[in-house]
Length: 407
Ligand SMILES: Cc1cc2nc3c(=O)[nH]c(=O)nc-3n(C[C@H](O)[C@H](O)[C@H](O)COP(=O)(O)OP(=O)(O)OC[C@H]3O[C@@H](n4cnc5c(N)ncnc54)[C@H](O)[C@@H]3O)c2cc1C
Image (cartoon, rainbow, N blue to C red; front, side):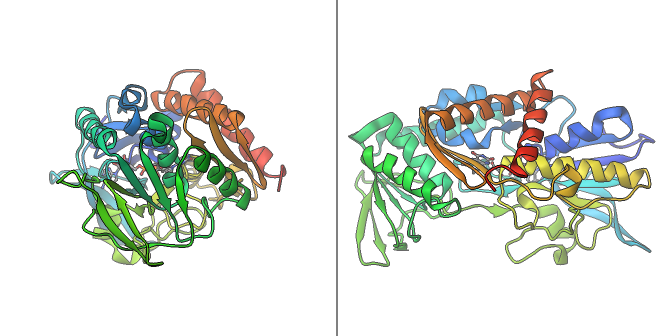
């Protein structure tokens, strides 16, 4: 439904992945608001499964879902604002084609960018077919590369290394390098130990405490390319080692994507391009705009789980504000004093490492948990009846249990 013309208060949600979809779904309930979901891509993608798609492209059939009917397929480029007593107020969201969507509230859920092909470009049009082609090309490159160097030992680097050896075993030489003294440096130390043990057993070379100083012409952004002559890229580490690999994957983190806020109010952005928000996700300097998920400048770990929680909080607060009630700070608004630390890092299909607050364990049970999360998230994105509500209940239970278990 277009936001124009309706007399209901209009909410424009920019970004149709975890945070945006959840916010739009919750705000549509009860029919009080007219909600328009805008996304540059024409599909929802289960981002945590992107690495599986690179080694097993048929997984895209399950993990890419076209957006629901009514989603506006467009790139938001800025806001039209008016000065009011309470501060700058956004009146409409400007789209790249020159049109505007009237807005009484805006939820910015523009997420983050990550090196392609791991993530599709965040603010560019992309169809399901284009994304599938992109993934297939990356798969073919991987399949024909005798050796792969993964730069970065966080969750993405570890999962990518595990996917590659999971499919091709020791027939490919896989190296992972991190400047940290262990893998998975943002998780408790035991997680890194378990991941390293699994990877080393499968033949992955793990280099700790060193970093790439000279990339030797291999790409640091964009789709990793095979060395044209069929040989190997030669990279130099700070520690003085020369590493050779036919394919180099930079897995060194993403960057917040916040183009609409950037164009409207540069002071709303922090040094990394993250959107500065207060305790209820209200964007600094913009009275009726909220930013959630990966694009929001909060200190918490950026995950699909926290994106979902952020969206729940904002949907609650927009309703409260509209009804003249008190807006509550996050995460209190979600019924908890603190957000639990939950992460599951898969080690190909049958093993994983899981963190639930201070508890860390590995093996097939976390792999089963990861499969369950993926299945439920895909159903939640499709809004499958019953399973969507069940998934909301599971996340709420996690929030409740995480408030006291293994703290
Ligand atoms: C490889 C990988 C593995 C991961 N694994 C896990 C995991 O196992 N578990 C977990 O919880 N988290 C995981 N994460 C993190 C998780 O994917 C992110 O935290 C989550 O996707 C954030 O959701 P979001 O809705 O905030 O943003 P995003 O998922 O980044 O979505 C933003 C959306 O906004 C759209 N957009 C951006 N700019 C514009 C614009 N100007 N106009 C219109 N649309 C726009 C984009 O196209 C996109 O659809 C992983 C991330 C990566 C990269």
